[in-house]
Image (cartoon, rainbow, N blue to C red; front, side):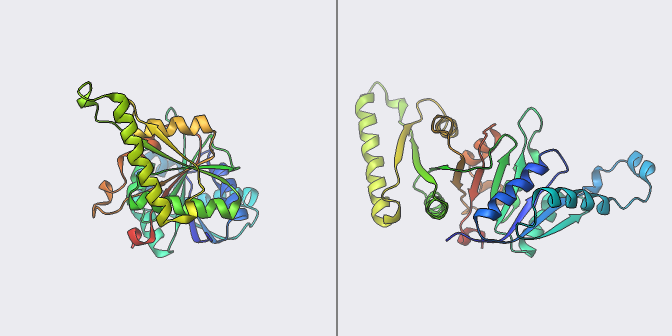
Length: 291
């Protein structure tokens, strides 16, 4: 059974905050969540001299907290225990990472606007430094989740994400599908038959699926799809599958074997985060990786 001891929701005082708080409420109504921290950091280094001169000694943190409290009161309706945390630090990534450790946050919820409205630079940094799993909610996403897509590459990280997805699907009565994107060594065409290469590649992948199902019988009945990259990136193929299957949630495992956080996220999650997808993206670390 999936339960969340503590969850952090990052607010930026934009119009997406109301959607984030409402989505948080929908999560708390469906999963056991013990406590939610609604957080915002006032980046003091970005406050101009003109701002300070105009507003004087105004208690900005108090004003921000009252603004967030209004949104939470309106959209959250005391779905579970919560706390509003407003900080004033020069580095947002550092203070949020400290909050994750201090309050033992298991999942952090981030909002994401479309690329024509935001560069997503802060979100990209947070993906690399926060020591917890992350749930990215695009501004165009829906609250209701009925179908889940779990792409795997047979790594430990992707298998962990798949098993977590299965637990979530069983707990909430969701439809779960698996997909795998494979590539062919095209540099050897036409020395070898493309048709034979495709057949051989699919045989190899199907045997990997058979082995996976033997080791994890709980996923034996979950349908899976093999997709050839065929000149597109793995992230592109996943995005196309999302649209084709009309999924409501994408779950990806994050690797953490590299001691440098900036190198442990992986290229596929990074590429998907930077795309304008319209479903929530759950990026999952295992407990062992986080420790």
